[in-house]
View 1: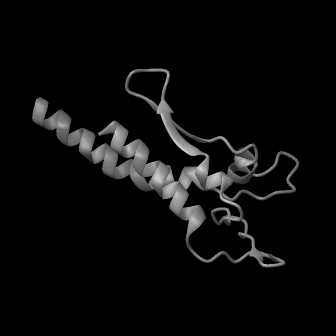
View 2 (view 1 turned 135 degrees about the vertical axis):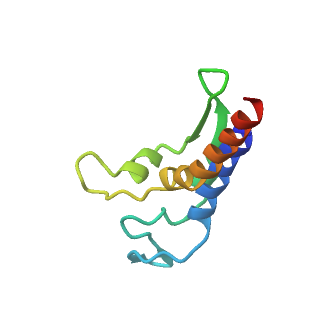
Length: 111
């Protein structure tokens, strides 16, 4: 159940980058995302770098992107020159309630 939820977050984050029209500025042939939208895909590094790894505790997982610019896109730049273009947070939120319900069902069956 935990592994499925983690991989669902990974998949949804990738889909948010790789699909859907973006509404930001156009640079040559590339259309960027607007602030608040998931980042636009340009060369694929951001989406390709998203992966699930074991967390520090037995029932934990880490979902992260190894692209050096992923934190600046997700959170915005500290100096405010880049507005947030979240992709992991919204993916996590989309999976949270189904995961919580599944855990509650397991607990109720075991009680």
